[in-house]
Image 1 (cartoon, rainbow, N blue to C red):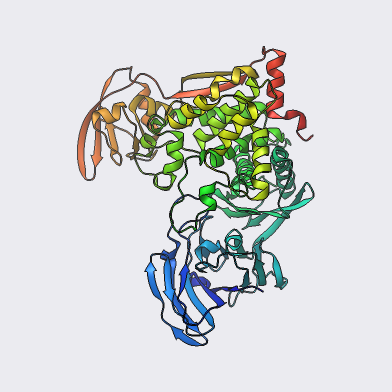
Image 2 (image 1 turned 90 degrees about the vertical axis):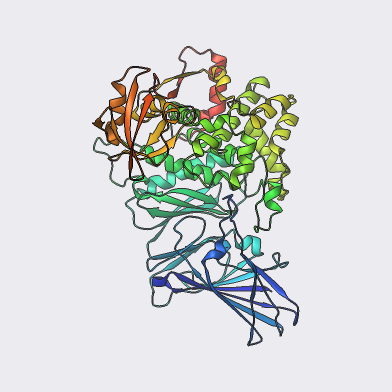
Length: 598
């Protein structure tokens, strides 16, 4: 019998208000503490969902009960009878994948944003009644919550094993809902399009089935009974958040595969669509890595305060490594296309001075403070545990493959993590992946791991590529962004009077006293706009001193900048056509092309 009973109503769509009622039995006279999470698993920053709480009221056996705030996300009341009813209203206008949104066209929410829990009763069964918005008859419900009694549109009663299961089941409502269904290993899947689109759904289903199968093959087991991609179709959005049996995506409408074939009749995947497939691949890999292979610090958290740990790279970075790897193994991108993506990542990291200041372990630990709160100095202070974590995972994988002569790979380590921890929901202790890699391989990885996690040396990804018949070249680039960063030492917008977004450490602009938010007006007395800035810089020789006029606030200033000689560096990777058969075999085994679908 459920003991926590929630009723969720989009009570005022045009005012963006949800009403949430919690009903439960209590002990008369015993204080009850109610709490709302301050962060959502998968997004490691305090979000203070309670700031959107508009009102809270309680009654016990029909009599009003005073509710007192304890802190920013906890409240206390003392029921006078055997029942407690708590009614809350929330404002919902956050269009991200992490919170709650409601207007007269659609609704979406995670229960972390709306569902208070009585402290100490998180493991009790929950029942949820989803009510239709008043005056709107065309909406239907999308959720992975187990249904108990619902109507044809999905409104009605659902169940959850406990509060922690409840908050891992997002809910969407709306009229523009289309299921793109496919199967992976006999398990039903769907890409649920939430919004208008012109997508080739047949191609989408086939490509997603291939990508998901490639990831399931790593673990050789698919633990879900159903899986949904919630795809919020937007003009230009991008992002995702993993859940135990689903993921929520923001999908740019133009990134979806076009229903109308290209004029030349060839079936092509656009770069934007390949990036979308990579996002789906990433979130799907989280079905194992994060949602079941869970860090102990997160598993122990009550979501009220931060859960610090130093190997977030092993969850987000490793998953980032496998997202594009899954695409090439599925035959959705070519080997060269995969190498191009690795090179783009390496270039982005190489152009981030923060890699010399923050180690990968520090990046993981500091996610709560720095990564999700970027500012003008972020490139100088931070390195992404996603990107550099993926590079380290690549380096570790290639090292294992070479030094064990193909007997072990990162695939084997992840599969064993699944068998020992994820399959039994046994949280992974800190440094669990690195420790297990050493155990399974028989290699002494201690110095390798410590150097690449605890110091700021570059990840070892490029050291091993030659063993796989791949050449890596690093040289100055000539594109506009590279010219502006390399020669001037800043990043700026491309509009008129380009505003400086970032000034890079130890570069010409910083030495000359140019600051973030300055607006560039002229070089040597000639007006400059963002679209011509790189073109103008190319006209000067290395070491030239350029007089820059800029606006700081409303004041016109002048700075003399000594230009560097070349654009920022760029990585390029290519397959070595002269590589020996052993290297070719290693590459084929790594990229898994032999198992790609026809």
